[in-house]
Amino acid sequence: MFNQKPPMAEDLQELVLNLPREKDLDGTNSLYLFKGAWVSAYVLRAVDSFQRHFIAKDTDIIVASMPKSGTTWLKALTFSVAKRHIYDPTESP
Image (cartoon, rainbow, N blue to C red; front, side, top):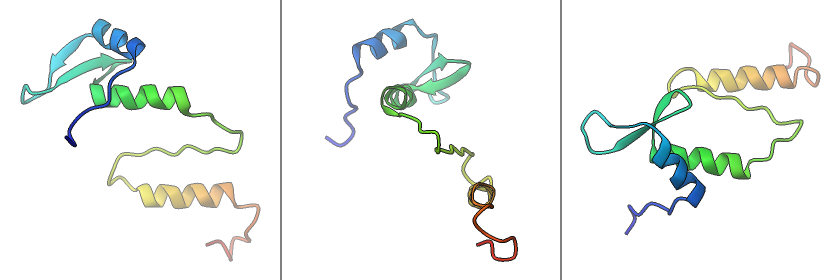
């Protein structure tokens, strides 16, 4: 019941059918070569959803990092750079 995957849009199904496909290391799931990276169908759904629904604004800042690679530090640096005009260097949070 909880493991059911949402259905793919028809154009996404067509894309998946045309991508190179291999099995993952344990042979249980399919991976698809999408824009130079091997990804699961779940990732393809997420990318498709993002591309369909995300509308960027001029004020948006997108920060991406791998888990356990200094994400908190990166967010703090991003905040400091983006808001440096508001705070004095001695008062920066």
